[in-house]
Image 1 (cartoon, rainbow over the protein chains, first blue to last red):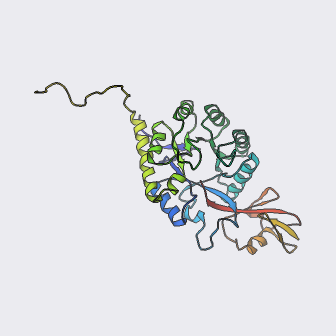
Image 2 (cartoon, chains in turn cyan, red):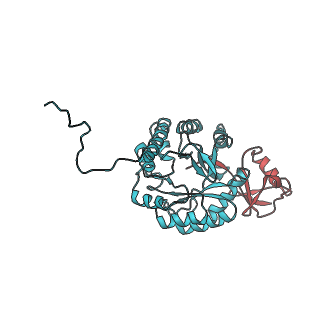
Image 3 (spheres, each protein chain N blue to C red):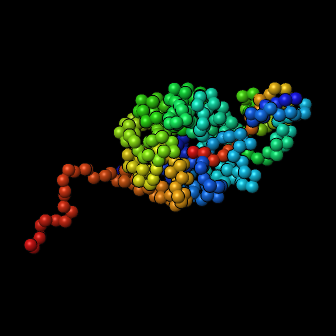
Length: 260
Length: 66
């Protein structure tokens, strides 16, 4: 199996790592981490102008220019389909008609697990309204399939709660989602360190989206570089096809020709 | 007249358009999006869209998030 690029909503990307822009110390660290990650798709939040704006700092869209990156506005902090739909419409206006969005409709603040009922409602309305929807969801294979069938351009199951860094809690479900996949499957949330990202890719996922694992590292820019390598290594390992697991040893040096 | 802007009740002169409001908030030329009473107001309509008593305006921009 030779590797190919990842295609999302008809556009090809070299990088299978998608990154967020939250929790960084400042804009300069945000920019450096994104460059080190090699990501081409970058997600951000939409908020009131009187919040989150430091007058002496450049605005986020100057740092992640739409000319250079594929921008992915998200609906973080939305707990109802209506709020998520409003956010997406504002984002499309903000980006002059760009209609790729990351839909997430959350269930509660403690787990940040998706409310799948509201997510399905929002996805349907957004798709009918012409949006290309990349959707954050639970690791439930049935829901993942429904979201793909309804026309979402990528399905993004969580591996563990958002910002938890717990790693891949249920690789079996991710595998089941992959078996029936008709659109790219991108793990969104749960990765803590580089080996987690490699495991996601070794499972056969098309990509991985992360924010906290990079931004909350002691050295975010170095971690961004580590994640880039882990995603590439995991993908290559998946394409290479791993050796079968065996119960007992199998010598690597030949027995024939021993002189003792 | 009183208009809700980003969740706060503000007093504005009558005859205030979305464009005037954006200027007043020093947001001219910035990458923003405007919603008026739950509907998007496209950039091309900022100039001719007049605000009225009790309107609910949301003005948003991009910030860091994951």
